Every structure is written in structure tokens, then in C-alpha cells.
Image (cartoon, one colour):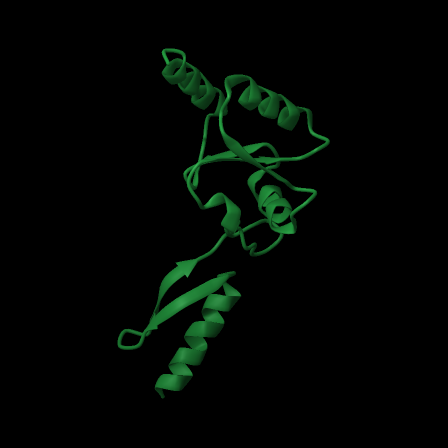
Length: 130
């Protein structure tokens, strides 16, 4: 009986567009630790690439994008130590960027920088005194 209930729970979860299940609470028969992204074209895995998760500043760029070139030149001008990741060189980066709305994306210590201009102004202010 429990295996039937478990099967129906898993089928319901898969049918709802859930992309991964980490565990199942065996007593209450409910999914635990679910991560998903409901997308207009179906479920999409949008896990952050491994290279972005480490410490420091990581810029996710496209070689043929004017915005990416501008960001890269500003980072170089300010002397920000960063690691560039190009979508053309890494399929994981390309797939992630396509789910996030394109390039450029900036991450600091594994967390997305929501306002790049504010980040650059703050970096300039903090490092102009040194």
C-alpha cells in the first residue's frame, strides 16, 4: 500500500514539473527538498554553474555582446579582480545564462549581483581611498 502511495506521489510531482527530489518523508508521504523552475516551455534546470559558486567576482559574458564588452572594460578600468566565463566556451554557462535572461551576469562570492552599476560604484568608492 505504501509503495503505491509513493508511486502516485512521485508521478504527481513529476507531472507538476518538478525537476529534482532530494528526499521523501516516509511517514507523512510528502516530498521534501524539492527544487524546481516552472518555465513557459516546461521545467528547466537552472542550477548555477560550479565555477560561479566559489569566492571572488565572476563575470558571465558573451563575446559578441556590447553590454558584456562594456562590463568587462569597466571591471578592467577599476582594477576589479574577476574571472571571466564566456558562454561560447562553456555549455553550462550558456544554458544558465539563457534561463536568466542573457548576458552579462555578475556574481560575487557565489551570489548574483542584482545591480551591477551599484556594485561598480561601491567598489570605486571603497577602493579610491587606497
